[in-house]
Image (cartoon, rainbow, N blue to C red; front, side, top):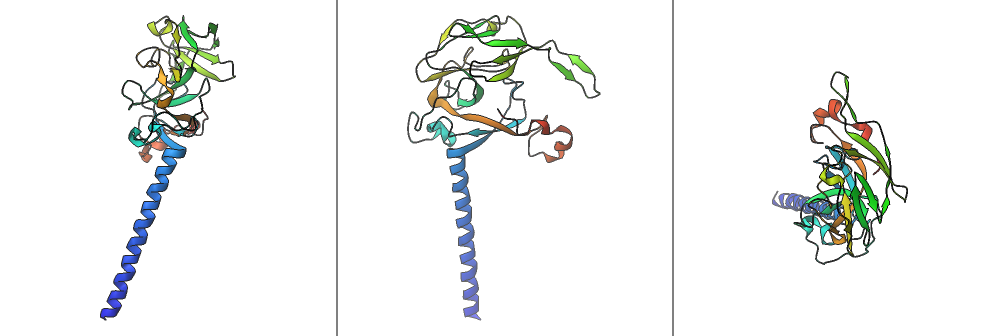
Length: 251
């Protein structure tokens, strides 16, 4: 009886060790994926509307621009600078750590690369003296709960960069402070970031300043879930508030 009990104890102990080993392996695999490949982010503000809405959940590729200390959780990477460095393309939607505290995650669009001169004049973006092509669209309309359509008066433009990247921007307050700026000359190893919701974005024009390339976390690739007025785990809200039409939208 004692021998049988001992065998049972050994079997249970072996099962426990195996379970712990599997858990450790799963944690390590998740850590590797998060550091090396992909990381999920959620959108808490309206600064990138209409490209990104509050309640969007994104996948960001960590490998797109190489790796820095900010690729690691809590920016705890053991080195400075970037390894396997690759510069972003103009028009990329990218997550970065704000240079003011090197801790807070922001997401904006890359508009200026090292050596570029960026300026806003009457709401239009100028890059190295050339105005970015933009086409005015119908003003933003909203539909209420009973189907009534209201014209918000918010101006919309489709901007198209020289490399073909195209997206829609909002101009909430024409000729605001953010619509007319001095010329910003982007320093070496920095980028200039602007939100698509031009008057409701704290970005390189106002407050954030030039963003060191080292602070880039990764490139936003696609939306994997979107919900209005709730968190993704609140599954009981999905039937009425999930925005399935936004799922798998490329960025």
